[in-house]
Length: 462
Image 1 (cartoon, rainbow, N blue to C red):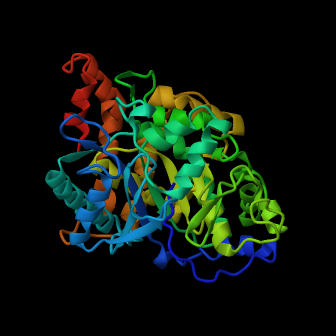
Image 2 (image 1 turned 120 degrees about the vertical axis):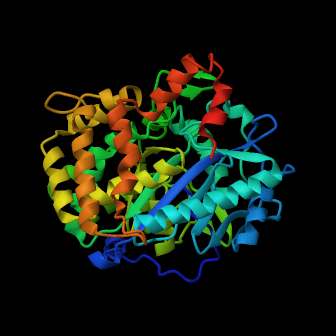
């Protein structure tokens, strides 16, 4: 969800819609330049009592960011309303570290060639934050939703865009604040070679996103009790903001491409405009009006390409297009599942044979069938019904086999001579066992934990 504010150089003013479309075409890359960008969030908690640390408290989020400077991370500063400067992110060789609204700690990894590099990057990051956490008395939890915190118990971070969003969310949905404050995710960002390649990857990504949600479902508790869902994080998106979320049926229509996505993005209400280091509240206003110089908060001013880039980051569909495609359906989880998510999508989307096979599997599903599957997954997981009869469980192994074949064909090896297929093993084990991560946690809650959800801190911490 985050972008990292930085001093902006002069950005070209948007003079025509052709520039909006060209911004997507600018992401096209030849296959040998395709990269993998993995993002993963985790909850931060105090070891003493499991509370979520605030930004400024002793041993809090500011201190955590400061501890990471010893590893070469450089602070990214943002001015507060009182003129103070706060570190709200870090930049470094492994990408960027940013803060979600309640202090969820995110690594947005660098664009890398192989899953071996991706998993090594993840390992470095977790080693660094764990070392910092041991010094500060804090830990890190790999779940899709806070298992025991109310909204009121959570802090907010001093980021200008979040203040705007926190005000706006209750106007457009009942669970937007939960999305911002109480959830964590794993995402992967992937490249495309052409408009046609983007379209096919987008369609496969959307159609099979519910399977990723099921395999990674890891948010069965709310405020200390089972919430009736396996992925409550996914359920939250169903009533966050209908104007900027969902399965995007138009992606499957004839003629879909860059222009159609640009039209969709123009219809997504704005959140803000970033000027001179500050966020100007434009929540609910129209980017189309901005193009005409008729934005009420900046009368007479037209947007730049940087404004368009910022605006694209405020749409939250299950798959999102920027100058790459983002797969957005998975709950947060432990180290091995962080590596497994990019393995799934790289295997399916980065080999033409695998991409074709995955499309053949889902191409006949109707709009209603895809939506029904997405609606059923948060509660039912792998038992969610699919088009033509059966459930996700019936195709999960087949999809993993397609992904495995795609990874084998990529032939990216580590020093030991292993290819990338081993990163799918945690997902194969889920399919073999028949239980998604949330179901494993629920079994323990009802069994050895004796109904004490605090045991999840021992079970799911990094």
